[in-house]
Image (cartoon, rainbow, N blue to C red):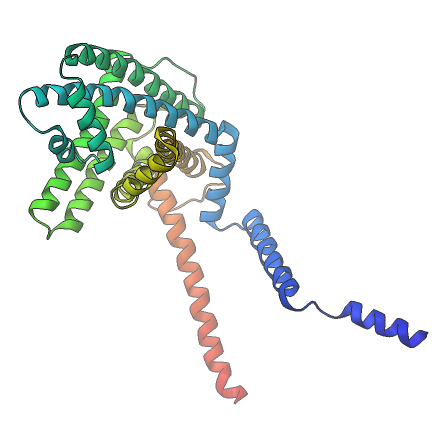
Length: 344
């Protein structure tokens, strides 16, 4: 009886094998990573924790959804206005589909807009007036959603956005990005060689537009460099979204439309716009987190050469941390090389 009990205890104490062992190891690794992320003092992880906390406090997911919906309504209004404009082109004998493609619109959207333009030649004046009013209203509400987001991110008093100047600036930013994208596509078609240079130029233009936009939104009185990290993030993110929209989204919209009808295409577009809303929210969160940590925070490192610039402070902190880690890794490799002949 004793032998049976000992065998049962030994079998119970045996380490798990197979799938159960793999699951246990992976779970332990995940728990170690979570503990490391929660306790480490490494600057990038600390910044990520603070950014996540700020995003959660302001309801970043809800704000991104509001921005996505407002931009979606703006796109509908802009589409109505574009249909009216293409109706005038169709009446003048030009091909609306070709004009839509020249503006950088995807094939699926271009064919839909062109078909609508052919159908509304007689009512194009009414559609033009309706589109202008809808664009103004949608722009005002979309600007307000971005305005409120910036105020919440920076924790400044809520103010009312400028109506006329704000609507004009909002539309100017979007139309400039559309024109830049169309010009870049046209340039790539004419001269396929400098594709990378054109892409970098587009990122630069997007970054400049985003920097001006973030600089005009509610925030404390800060130097212009305080919004550069978020502007760079938005510029790179928008360019990546554009590349994905060229190579992947047309097929997604077409398949969604064929499977679920117009509702499927609308849902796919809303999901894509939610990513854009997330970028806008996180750009502000990144700017505010960097500024408060390396300018106002009491635990900010005293870095020579950083001055009052939070971007420089963050860069120097990261460079110093990476340099220290690289030095420790080199010391460890040299020690291992010295110990290897002795062990042999």
